[in-house]
Amino acid sequence: MFTDHIDMEARRAFPGFTLDIAQKIPLGGCTAIFGASGAGKSTLLRLMAGFLRPDAGRIAFGDALWCDIGAGVFTPAHRRPVGYMFQDGRLFPHLTVEQNLLYADRRSRAAGASYTVRDIIDAFDLKPLLARRPDTLSGGERQRAALARTMLTRPSLLLLDEPLSALDRGRKAEIIPYLDNLAGRFGAPVVYVSHNVDEIVRVADETVIMKSGGIEATGATADVLNAYGVEASAAAFETGAVVTGAVIGHDEDYRLTRVALGDGVVSLPINKRKSLGEAVNIRIDARNVAIATSAPSDISIRNVLPATVTSMTRPAESPFVDIVLRVGGATLQAQVTRAARDDLKLAPGQSVYALVKTASFEL
Amino acid sequence: MTAPDLSALWLTFRLAFLVTVILLLIATPLAWWLANTRTRLKPAVEAIVALPLVLPPTVLGFYLLILFNPNSAIGGFWLSVTGDTLSFSFTGLVIASVIYSLPFAVQPLQAAFESVAGALMEAAASLRASPLDAFLTVAAPLSVRGFLTAAVLSFAHTLGEFGVVLMVGGAIPGETRVVSIAIYEHVETLRYGEAHALSLILLAFSFFVLMLVYVFNRRHRVHVH
Image: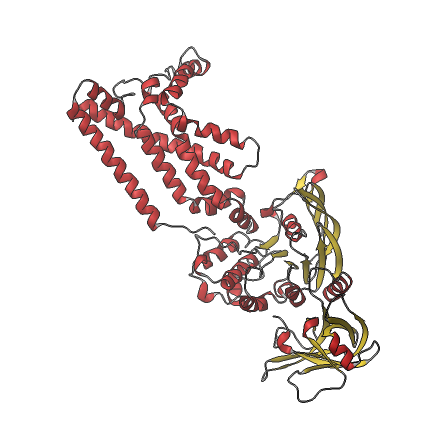
């Protein structure tokens, strides 16, 4: 049942915009579709779900052919084994949260359920909300209920369309733990559409980057985001780097998770869903990295990473210098003022310490 | 109240009830189609549906009279199948009223359906509901007010019909002599007492029904996001 890719070869024209892709999209854990607004991410997802019919092309999920326009094959949305979560939740306003869940459950119970409504209510902590109507829920509660409802379709493929974009930062932090490792917990690969780098770094194993209706790059999240972000610097997200480290411990007292990165250790806000040794992606914004030429003491910053300066670039007219650092096998970026660079006499090849505040880690 | 007037009242309510039922059956699929279609024919169909709103009832009645004539294709066909004429019959009146009140059923339903059509139907499809299932379990319950408005307006509008009845129905007691025709006859023959009685009944009834609708709409607000 677990297939490792979805084969998309589809063209769909809209006034002023055409989506045109021919690509195997890798599935497994969580695959992010990332790009700026208007890049075609949601269109791609809607083609997968069957809400949109391509003008030409074919879509196959493993052995199942969902769409082949040339051969006149088109499986309508309600017959695809797909779970779809909408940006705005789209809970049915005339039903309570519980009735919304049962609506999905009743129509997919035959699909070989490995979990029950009770399991889902527990997994998403929905017990206190069951009797409520959708219009009395907060944004975060609504998305939690919507995700639970989607899981009750017992999908073979889970499609999430910007599930957090309607929420403010506090609400996002509330929901994101429920999005961790959905594929592992519920046995369906996830395709996650978002224009937010931090979300993707947090949830996605693989990332597909889209740009003006086409696919630009596909690969492991950290690799793709770094390549895309460093090389196409004028691109959709601010300078910064995504690094991958391994979890080495959880500190219950200080509520921190420690991650080994090169020869140093980084502390993150605690995330106990990650087990020891598990790889974790961290996005480090260049503006949150400071540089010291000797290991500092008497400082609140706990994340002090031995690093080597590899290159420095200065955008014209800018007071800042973008510095690329090597930390173990990973690449980090720092943005410091030109004045600081001159005072510290920074030069490529130099050994330094990269300082990062734990409080700057998003999510 | 005289026996002929009572019979006119009974006839009128029978007509309005039957027309309302038929209209809901016809208008529901038609309004759903209009709310969902992307065809270029949509404005033309909407215009045809809305025609009875602006046409003088006499114009509509005139054309129907010609269509219902036993010498025309439709009227002749009806006569050969049922042995009855369409013009000056209760059946003809029902057909004429259905056409005449069509916009009053279609427009509220279409408006209700449009507010649930795209987004929530997609959500239902994503939960494995077939289009019919989604219509019955999501679109219809969220359109209760649309259905109620459509039913009440169709009923009330058929009650108040005059010109079309006059043209295609005449005033055959027990067959086509509805209340509005009866009132007209009373006024013509200066029997104001009878005219008052019938008018008052229609006025009170109409007010009472509309009140009920507004009270219901206040209590039963369904929020669609």
